[in-house]
Amino acid sequence: MSHDNDHGHDDDFHSHDVPSDPALRVQALETVLADKGLVDRAALDQLLLKTADVVELAESGRLQIEGDGEKIGELLGLLEEPDPRFPIVTPRA
Image 1 (tube, rainbow, N blue to C red):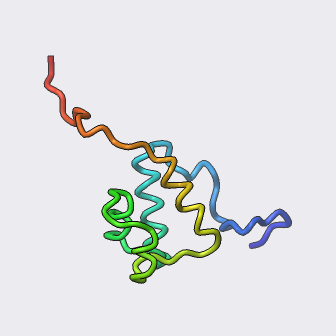
Image 2: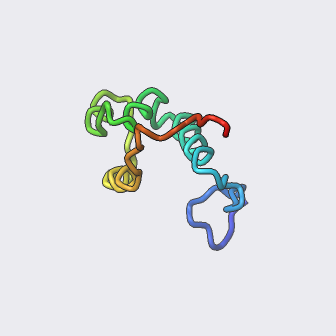
């Protein structure tokens, strides 16, 4: 079904479908990219962990870029560097 105000989005997508938890949003993004065949999950992990770069993954065919490739750099630039000292598990008081 198409709408007059179609902006290239899927008709069954609604903004309330986006999870509020950042981890769930990352998982959803990863699933969409992998399901569309734009990136394999291992390549995405390497990109996020900075053990490979966009050019390397694109040249190897493990990452496909459609549209403005600079947007990937912008997206990655928004990610904060994780604190390796972050207490994943804390003792109970």
